[in-house]
Length: 261
Image (cartoon, rainbow, N blue to C red; front, side, top):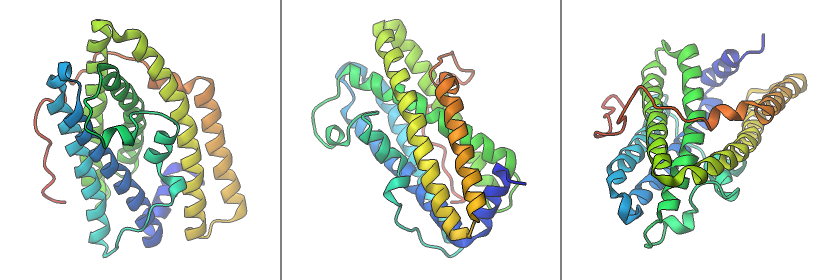
């Protein structure tokens, strides 16, 4: 039976597929670490109190990148170049979602509006990350090779999402509500399209590596398009709601180390 668990099991069991999966994940996490470090360095002067939390966010992302590379190393595998069509972060930037890398490479301080956009964009993408990690924990939380890593990353992603909710609600009370609302909607609608395109690209590469039949590839593509249709009709709303999280001040301390990795 074709299920998310069976598909991931195929990927985990094949070295070449696992190498591509971990390489894509490590690249995205490392890119997120760099982005957060630059945002912390350039954060708007009136919002410097956010800088330590943004630094913590970036440190967590860097740690996740190292974890995925360590999983490869344990198997004696090296990372492979990430196909451009599977680069989620780059494709989001091309859609104008988040802060442009050109701006982050400069020295000009960010504006308050820039920081609000960053947090709104993060709220959307961290929802996706948290959902994916929840799924992996459900299916592979007790896996002898992956279990510890995915539990650690899952906990971090829950912290990141809580941080975005709490800070955006605070900024909404400070008068940024309209910008937050508009940015969340724009980001969510763009993200679900990018996620669909990246999912299709990843499945094409995995199908080639694993020798999937045309029928299996067709069924998977139909499933991805079906999920997009649902998200486009209504599912995207889960990515834009704001509520006070149970984990308050979730990024208020240093990043949790990962000595095993």
